[in-house]
Image 1 (cartoon, helix red, strand yellow):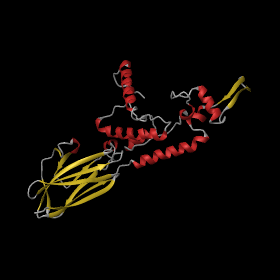
Image 2: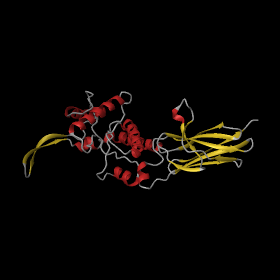
Image 3: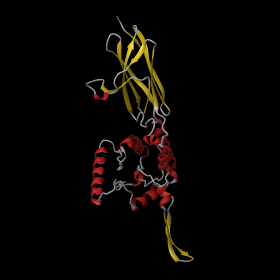
Length: 311
């Protein structure tokens, strides 16, 4: 849903909404479940927005007849959980109209005639009271009957309960499958001089959720990941100026940071790979280096490689 921005006119708001709709229409040419939300967040919070958008995009595919809608600021549990704890959460509240069964003309809506036919055919009349006259003690003769929205839209009729329970369970399991998982991905050794070696290492989180949210960091609740370098006794770190370096000139995605410390704190966003470059000095012809990543939410992983210099 569209939101107002300070100082924005109705015309500007309409133009912005049209641009959003155009972008979403283009996105859905490739993925009919694609989601795009009219929400401006601070740059440091964008990783949270990106993670949530990816999750609810898959949620739209799993749940089918639900429409993801950003909410907050009105006391809802999922908004308070994020605001107070920095934890991602979702509220699956309303069932919605049964377009997957009742929408005959494919316009994405269920009108009153389609609703009546759906009640007759799919529900076999369940939840429908034939309209008829009754005498009300205060109002006299009145008509009652039909169906209540809460029995056919706000919550699913009985025959759909099992289907909805399964879809909700599948969505919860999908969310759980996307909890962060850290991994030391690859280690590469490149000779620099006779006894100096460049060590390039990549660490990644290939799940959707970050190892901690931007909100939890603002609240001071985040526990940062620890990345540790260790080595055999004959290998020492060499101090190099901090900075960004391109590890492969033909692939800008391999950009990394030079590091001269044995332990540092970091945070991995969803589906992110970070690359680091170390310069080491090795006495002798063989040794080993090891890297370990430890994350409160993403687990622990380590990788060791042996180094041997052939004369």
